[in-house]
Image (cartoon, rainbow, N blue to C red):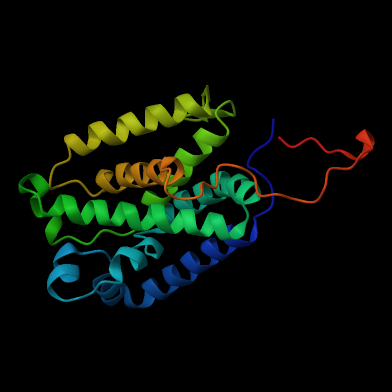
Length: 222
């Protein structure tokens, strides 16, 4: 049994470093950073802060928030970047993160959006749920410990997490501090991106060097 996928790949490492740097800056000017770069629907639509659906991904509330998200980026992102290549991985991460933010923005405009129109959303959780979706599709038989105890296949784990995000979204109240809409939005954006026929899908591994003719030179990829 092993923990994690191994050393960080280039994009995963860059994402983790960028989030840590921003977190350190937030320790000095927390209110200002959240106001300018957190995703507040009202600020995006009435003040022209159109960068917020991107920048909110790099902000976190506390040590546990950033620790959990960056640990998840490492655990699920490394396998995906190795499979797709850095460019395709970065594109997918951006699509899911921004897609999660746009879902939160759209939901805030609906009658049942509650007070979310004026409340900033921060964190990489939407993109993390997008990575989880892709990981479950590409590696459906991988085993993961649910709650650190129960072994589940990746496919079943993703279905459970998706169901939890969906039910929590339906029952979310204005007093909740977790944006379940963003979680669900990240999964939906990831699924759409991987399955839509109008775009070249990164599901297949990019072509590499010719396969060696000698079987002894082959390495097994898990």
